[in-house]
Image (tube, rainbow, N blue to C red; front, side, top):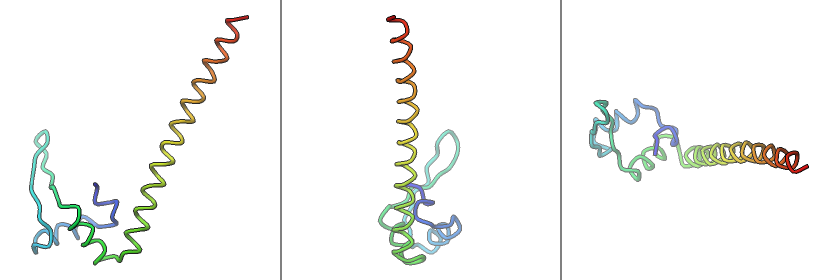
Length: 93
């Protein structure tokens, strides 16, 4: 889960980590540090700072983006298959 999906700013997350509101573990991937956070704590922080309505709106936006991405992918696949179909029909004649 990305923090941006919950409408939290990076500085809000770091501040919550400093004061102990969020448990975290620092890990490294290819020499780059990143933090692992507990999803339930991040959600509750987002609700506390921005309200439940804002969190729900962000979730809906994220779902819509995923759906639109999948629709566009399927459209490209359909166009490719239609092209292959036409090529086969032309070869058949």
